[in-house]
Length: 209
Image 1 (cartoon, rainbow, N blue to C red):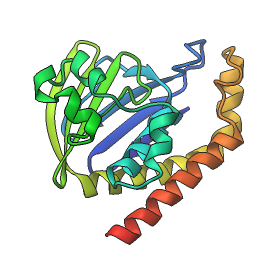
Image 2: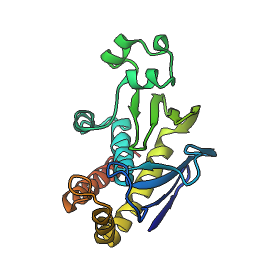
Image 3: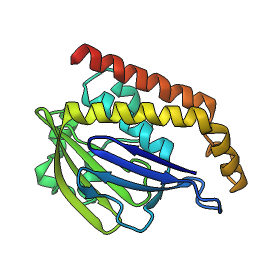
Image 4: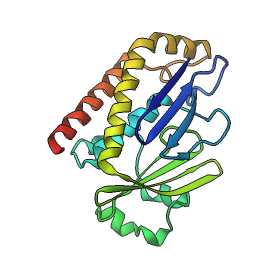
């Protein structure tokens, strides 16, 4: 089972192996951002495709400066400045800890649910400065207009939701066949939660742009 998502900046190709893989990272994912292949390994890296799309949506909500971002911060995935420093995206004195704590310099760091990867997103005026480390590959900064980034995420996430609604039962059967059980299968509740986040992102964009 393979899925291809292509937007202006993102290209995601993922397939679910038919043999047992890590339940935490059940998909093989190839990710390209702009002209840069993030996952140069043949066939990509192992990852959680649902988590990848969910975290991009939540990141986009945070980038637009909405209150719901606080829920995302406390939930699972993003943030902190230390993660970006440890990955070599920045030197410690480039993002002073006191500035990060005070909110003077925002930086969002996440694995995007890809194994052995770290991504750092730093808003600078109307652009994002993106660094990443995936395996031995370290790259950045890539500069992307924030609005265009968020529009791309919205488009890809809606396409992904359509794919999930059509294939959820097949995906979960394959995960179960590979020995995976809850919480590593995708529930209808999680699907509904992602759908609500995508709708919320759409509403924010319509108000701001």
